[in-house]
Amino acid sequence: QVQLVESGGGLVQAGGSLRLSCAASGSIGSINDMGWYRQAPGKQRELVAVITSGRTTKYVDSMKGRFTISRDNAKNTVYLQMNSLKPEDTAVYYCNARVVPQFGLYEYDYWGQGTQVTVSS
Image (cartoon, rainbow, N blue to C red; front, side, top):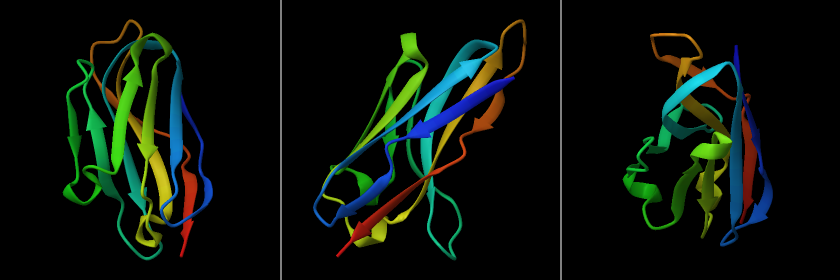
């Protein structure tokens, strides 16, 4: 079994910054893409950013220049640095990892429990 544990959410004023972390643990063979998604109240979950095992990154246009995704493969951890936060960034942020379990052949999607980010105006 694989677990993803997020941390770093909280309350911040508009224009402020937060750094989210997500650590994967358990029976891990390898981790391919890791990413962050978010879900605001009454809205569908949406992609924020993705990073491959080779550290190629992809961002949703509205986050480009404000958010930076990175990862530490040795620690099985992905980060999301969020700067210039806006009230519309308020959401629950979820970590996602595509993992090939130890002794496994196939890739599976795993999700963290979510961390609340609230940006006040």
